[in-house]
Each structure stands twice: as structure tokens, then as C-alpha cells.
Amino acid sequence: MVVRWGAMPSSVIRGWHYDATTRTLDMRFVSGRRYRYREVPPEVAQGLAEAPSKGIYFNRRIRDRYAFVEG
Image 1: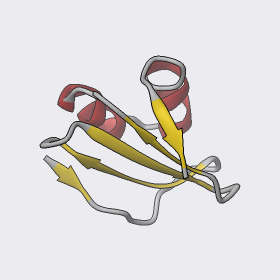
Image 2 (image 1 turned 180 degrees about the horizontal axis):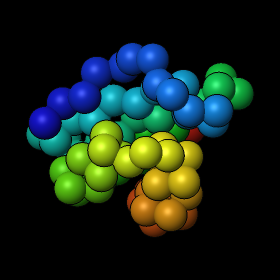
Image 3 (image 1 turned 180 degrees about the vertical axis):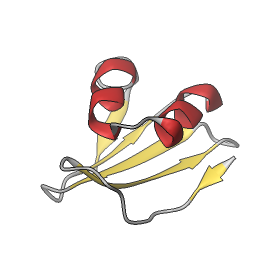
Image 4 (image 1 turned 90 degrees about the vertical axis):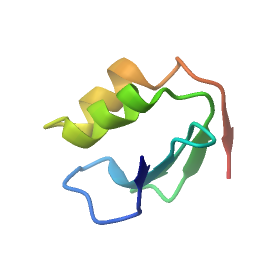
């Protein structure tokens, strides 16, 4: 599963990209900050894709749960 960058209906998240091969989730926020989360399971990325509120899902299921680098 690979999700491409794209417009997103979120007041916090501008876009995201997931690569199941490397299990990395790249997040881009409206603030301009970018983060790469490591070892994110495909089902978590799928949940983000299906979540009605990307920001709430991110805060509950991704933030502070996976190692990341900024940039």
C-alpha cells in the first residue's frame, strides 16, 4: 500500500504518504513541518486513510507511538 501526497480535508494535516515496503509514514502539517514516522503498520496507515478526522486519528493512533525524524 502506497498513499500519495494529496489535498486533505484537515485543519492540521496538509498531506501524507505511506510506503508499506519501508513501513514509513511521511506527514506534512499545515504549519509546514514534516515528519517521517518509522515502523508504522499498514493497518494504522489504512485507518488514517479511512478516518473521518485525520487530526484526531493521528493524535490517538500515531503521535507519540512511533519513532520519527523531523525534516
